[in-house]
Each structure stands twice: as structure tokens, then as C-alpha cells.
Image (cartoon, rainbow, N blue to C red; front, side):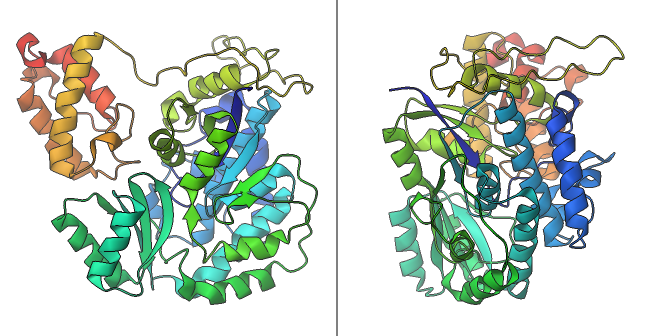
Length: 452
């Protein structure tokens, strides 16, 4: 069976300051896509996304929560579409596109079912349809399986709490009123379960929002749909969309129906999909895939804004057409050479086997693994996170929600634990943003006995 690749389009948490800034230096599709989105979204009163993403100081996601919902959502949508376009233009041929919740809009646009202009209108219509529910609900991820979370909801006797998403073996998302979510958080803490509120102002995938479905369908009236160039599989409807579907109605239903992402991943795995690419920022979906099925390869090219070009090359080399070659390095002061467009005739599923390029250098493997183990223990106890969340490349703030104050306190403990030399204690939070980066810093600066 050929090795197949699926593109995963993440939902409303997939935002990272600085995303795509490096990628646009090498790939003209980024600028072209976002310029077009800026022009189209201006018709709906949405400020330019390009200024948000590529300004001198791109705002963090918590700052974005104080701005119009359409702006953050347009940025996430734009990142997904731009990533898909540049990868396909470089010769990557996905077997299937999978959108998670809000990500289904980008997946359908990238499939050809809707134009980019339609996609911008769909994003705005979705945000408008949900405005009435802003502040009245919330969502939270719980580090437990669906059955245990169901028992937790039952024990709390919270009839308005529901399971909104099943993302992995130990990641279940609950949805409901704000006060009920807060009570669930206290119960989870008492049971030593990982629990974190999501950056959402409403209770998506909750039956109480049925009115938003009607509103969304009304706001999208007149949008036409076109034949799809790539298959789109919906984790909400549990099947592949067809050209005969009423996609606007099905997108509306996505607002209230639960997401069963793990079921879709299992189904793709049985069909030979062994490579999964996050078409958007961070790696929320590829991490869930890693925890769901064995023996697969994942790529999150926009995980680290400082290494986007390298990560995109890995995806293109591993998953793309064999005729594609990375562009040569640009001479000093010259613009980077554009990516070479791949041959359209190959499906790209029979390529050579490659391991994805590591996102963190690997000095002194044995010592590094020992240091990482001790760091996982330290951070796991302090943050009460399951060990599988504390991988070497997980970004502490962007992915795990560790704020700067907590990170500073933890880095002080790291310095004490490993007896770091006084001159190395300039704890650079922005640079030491993952356990892997911290481990490398420890190995470079710690007392030799302290890392054994």
C-alpha cells in the first residue's frame, strides 16, 4: 500500500505570533494569499490580517481575544490556506484533507469546493452567527479519555455540560456554561487530571447553540459550491463529503455537533495514511495523531516561527514529488530563490522514506535524554501535565499555556537543580521556550556531575 499523506486543518486555537513571517520569504504564495484575504475581508469590515501577522510586534493569542473575533479567525484561516497552497505548488499531493471544527472551512476552500472569496465570507458569517453566544459559554480540554470525562460530567450532575470533541486517547474537550466549566476544572484538579480552558468565548459543539446554525445558513445564502479536487473528510459528520452534499448546511451543523477526531484518524490509518501534516500553526492535531496511532510520521511546519523554512522543506522533501528540489541558498542581501513547482503528474505517495528533520539539535544524546527526563519530572509536577504532553519540542507558552511568570519561576528551579554556572543564569524565556531548548542550555552550562 502506498504511503499516503493527510493534511490537517486546525481550529480556533491555531495561532502563534510570528507565524508565516519566515515562510513568506521563501514562498510567494504566503504574500499572495494573505494580500487577497486582506482585500476580500475589507468588504466585511475586517482589518488587514497581514498587518497583524507581519507587524513589528505580532500580538499573542490572549491579546487577540480582546479584538473582533473575525480578525483572529481570519488569521487562522489564512495561515491554513497559505500553507496548503505552498505545499501543493511544491509537489505535495494529499490523499485527504481533514478540518477540525472551524478548520473545515479552510479544508473545503483548499479542496476547491469554495473559492477563497467564499471562504472569507464563510469565516465572517460563522463569527457573526456566534456573536449572540459570546461570553455565555466556554470549552476546556481534559487529560482523560471520553469514558472517564463522561463519568466526571455525570458525577458533577451538570446537565448542561457535554463532550464537544474527542481528540485523542487522553484528550477530551468539554463544552458548556462558564460556571459549569469552572466547577469541572475544580473537580479535575481534585482528581489530578490535566485541565485547561481553551481560547474560545463560547461553547462550540453544544446543542444550545442550535439557533446559530439557522443564522449561519441564512448569512451564507447564495454561496455556490464547486466540484472538489481533493477529498475532504469530516470528523464531525464521520464521513467524506461529496459534491452532492449541501455543504453550507453541513458546515452549519458543525457548530453544534461533536468532533470525533480520533475516529477519523483511525479510519485514515486503516487506509494507509501514515504521514500527517498540520496545515496551520502549532501542532495540536498532529500531537493528537501521534497519541492515537502507532508508526506514523507527523509534520508541524509552522510550530516554530524561527524554523518554518526548514520544516516546510522537510514536508516537501518527504511527502512531495521526487522532481522537486529545495531552492539554493540566497546570496547575501539578495531575495531568496523561489521554490520550484513540482510535476503535476505524480501522486506523491511513493516517495523515498525519510525521517522528519528534528526541530532541536541533539548534542550528547545519552546526557540529553537524562536531562529531558529530569525536566519532565520537574515540569510535570509543577504543572500537573501528563508526561506525553511534555515532549522535547512542545512550546511551553504557545502549546502548553505556561505564562512568563510561571516559566521564570521554573527556570530558576532548573538553574538550582542543575547547578548552572552563575554566568549562564540569564534566563532567556523567549529562547528557552521548550524542554529541548532548556535541556541543550543545561548541557552547555551545567556542572558536569549535575547532568548525570
